[in-house]
Length: 310
Image (cartoon, rainbow, N blue to C red):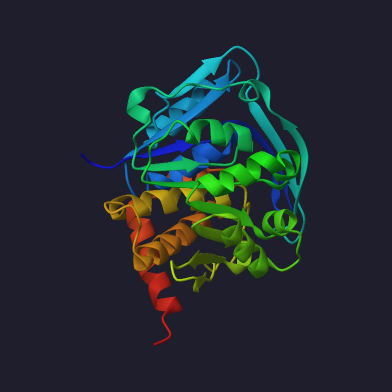
């Protein structure tokens, strides 16, 4: 049977303010970005989430037209999760202006049997209790969880529980440093390993990312990946979510033994980096909706040439 990934996260309506313009109530949420990225690598995933009765039919059509099924998404009476954010001139820096959790806040589904045994569980950015609730129902070979600084601070006990449960923890610089109580991202990555994560990824925005792993004999292993060079970044919203979705899809074929080879992990990080770069080229998910696997393959070949040093 072909291995599949479970992608769980928020499905949202985003309002965005960047130095290059604004977008109001566009497709947002961690799950759609992750799923749109994953489908550029593999069709073998299911997106799980919830929306309110205000979720536009045209957004459903756009996602399904791009190959992202909403058959596992529940529609409930109430408001869809909504996020409003403003980016500074340095778009590595952003401010959350408003978060409306809506129907997501008290949605605690029991997974149907066929979703419990996917090879990979991808817990995108939701509150740690929600992530843990879903992950605890899974028997996945490999699991990963993303985080958000607001929820890390609000739910410290669940954050630690999730770090210890998921195989891989992903945070950006500010999230990791806030959690670890340091101003050094590399030290924060090591702290995630100390806390129980098998792997950690610290995302450095336009400076790329670092993959951390500690071998069974206690040796630390690092892989530093630069970002895809963007002549003109329009909107970084969802780049971290698309990174995670692409990473999970790229790892799927490598999970037969339960522990992906290091070379497969570094390759998956490169794939995720290329797709995260595509995300930033237009507002919201527009660039992801238009992207194709052939575009990703070409850019990955270019990225390999750019980063080869020997």
